[in-house]
Length: 310
Ligand code: SIN
Ligand code: MN
Image (cartoon, rainbow, N blue to C red):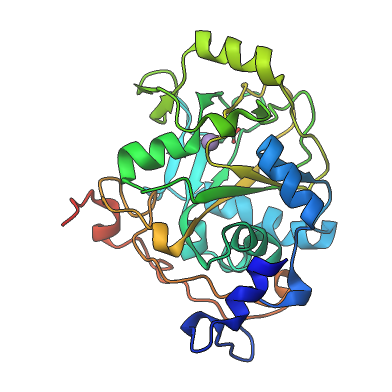
């Protein structure tokens, strides 16, 4: 993969520096995606890897969850009319296990590889989709929101999702329209009423046409499964009426040069620090590594406020 090597060849590149425990997620041996997977990603807009993490690794994250959901922090968005957590934003800023996940090479490296560039954390969220109460996510593209709200210049950011719970056909799996990412940014309307979380959503006529063209898939698998998906891929998920939680974590990673230009949303939802992520070693979830937890004693007031770009 020549694009990869060309990065290494850039002598004096500050991103190539390594320290004992931190790696920039470079390194020929750590490449996550094969050429065939890169081609599949270009065609379909997503890649699914069942059981990419072990049960022991997931246990560390699952055990930490309830402590976080119980907190009445402003980063915890509740379901409409309920106390059940829908989304916990920015847990990597105050929880050690999630701070390690945010620096995990199996999460970060595929995106760095696709963009051939260091990435930073644009958004970090744990979506509860709790048993019986987890509400739907309307049809949308992530980049639509990042462009409209955050003035992110290009679709050079994407999600890596990891299942903490098994995802099956009953607990509201993500649904994708394969190939829909090739159409770029589609018209969207700002829906502030359907759920407790505002979203730029795509109308049903468009969805009908897109599904005729590309069909629908819903990747399902055990805890520890990983999905990498393009930020223009059209997706949704239904409510969870099953008795099983569907907790998944989403890292939205953005190429550093493509950082957002407007700080309209709170920093807990759209981060304003564009430092490239330094990865920890591959065993980081199972061992002690020091991670910064800047919001451990509470979220700074400034991070909760909208801030207009200069
Ligand atoms: C999202 O699209 O951001 C979340 C969807 C889901 O968790 O089902
Ligand atoms: Mn989304």
